[in-house]
Image (cartoon, rainbow, N blue to C red; front, side):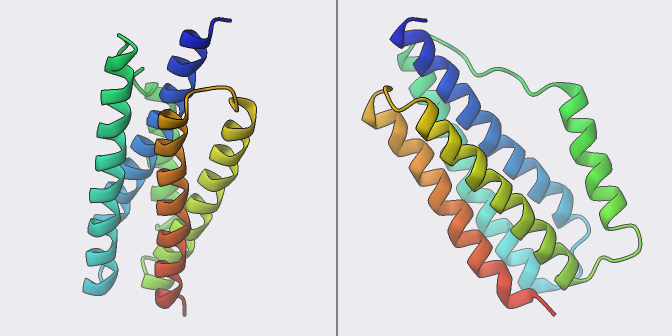
Length: 146
């Protein structure tokens, strides 16, 4: 596979991760009853949106557009949020779900960075920024654990 195709593939995976994070926050925001949790979710959502935008710009440099998230993936995310908050919409539960999601994101992105170690540094920096957001967000959500 050419280096250009690998870059596009890498950026699409970063974009998917950032948009999935943003969408999950949007869904959880609808469930949040605590103002502090809601403010933190909104802050994180803004950061995910910025990183997704950075990824779109990088894809444009490669003369590519981001791949759309599959409807099945969106449905899985939606149903997971619905099931996990059906009986418990507490700050503790929302924080737990955010921490788990961030941890999965960190693992996925870390594997991605290793697998695509040959791509340009400016693209790696976008993924590193997303990893940092996941790490920081996870730490910030710990204050809401019971």
